[in-house]
Length: 307
Image (cartoon, rainbow, N blue to C red; front, side, top):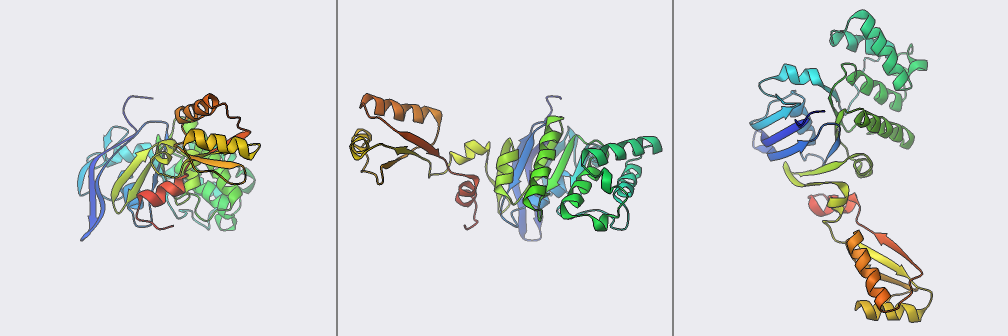
């Protein structure tokens, strides 16, 4: 790995007529990480992927992928990226193996190297047994795995996954998650757009929220969750006396059913301070649960989307 970011974007703008799709976007993605771009439909996610992957040009700003300028060096950018879009790019009339061999030819691999890479990818994605079957006979999960395998034929340093698990069943989605984790573990940078907030929470080291073409928030999943209200610690007591003593020590109204809810950000420091106050008041707590906002709360609080 190098000190050069896998993706660096400064002042990016793109419009379609009077409609501003991306407005003054700045972001940076480190090498070997999983970065997720979230936002409502029409927020500009796919436009961002299309610009980063050289499919369309920006109106303004600077965009670099692996140090290469997307506008001035599109060929060099294409040599280091792979793209898996929302819709499968397979040829249904070719077998899985033939689809991969076709991609090997498009990447100008020699015959022997193309066959070696094809065999390796079929094995890696659990498709060896279906290699000679036409792609039209593949299940949704198999098609997405084959589509991603084709994107990896050129051994890219950065891969763009634009809503890669849309329409997949839960098992196939989990299989795809494992593949993404393995790619990042091998040093591949994964730029992920998704409609599934749990997916971003599970996979991404950093998340950016896009709304109406503007970047409204960026950070780790935990950092973003701490930025919205709703976090609390739920304390459970053995009897009403202990609960009343805790409420008095914390300056809170009494709870119900031997439970007391204490507002907080869910951080270690605030939890330690809470327990210290209870200890000073000699209050025994039978159990506690920390509740923090999830990415759904973040999404609805920071974008124009409605729950």
